[in-house]
Image 1 (cartoon, rainbow, N blue to C red):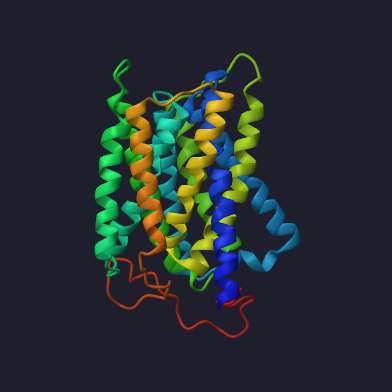
Image 2: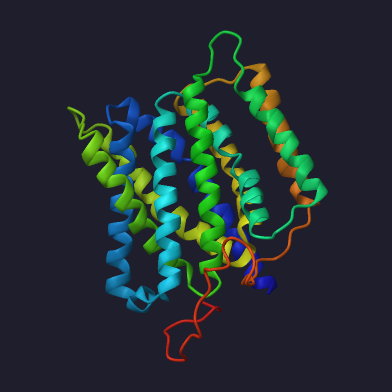
Length: 316
């Protein structure tokens, strides 16, 4: 059990480090001429395609999944695909650092969604929610330049939807390995974002100079999703989401060096409040991930009696 937890922590931190690159690469691609919908459609489709290719060639048993689990992955992917569209639309209006700071409220929304699934937060968790709320108020205040309110709403919507897909996949991950969940979730995301691009955008930049950050995003999406779901499998959605706040360090550092973005003093106070909330996670107590009973709004995501000849089990 301790080995699985250690592996889960390492996977969650790796995912956080990679996800910290997402707003920087996404913002760079948009600045170089790609539309938000083009960025999200291209990186999601390529990530799903390469993962499917690898699984077919090297790990065909990972294609197996029980029907309700497949429906759960498709639901989570559709929700996350819509959230991705909101995310990149917000990045067109917000700086990478502010956008990622707002997006990083998703652990608090994870707590809310798990509350509906009969996972009750501690008193300390509620205190951390209050700190994060204060952080949002501080982060969206700029004395010399007003933060785009629509961009803020879009990014918060993306954060809420990202948080929603974690508890859904947590239920599936109890019986299904992380690569399988990653594959079908990415396929479902592609089924949402690619048609959205074809129907509402179809813009393509005049030059291909912005293609390299999109390819970087593809690698980040491919690897970070795999590590994310591996972490959720062994730690649960709340703990993985809280460790995921480490991506803030990556985003703030790289956006400062690469994009020359600066935060005001008031916004740094918001960063401090958010990190206090993160540090309190060390003393916050959360229930370990479990299969889930027959209560809660996600109780329908339960595998049938699994046959003994399936190519993997809950330990994979």
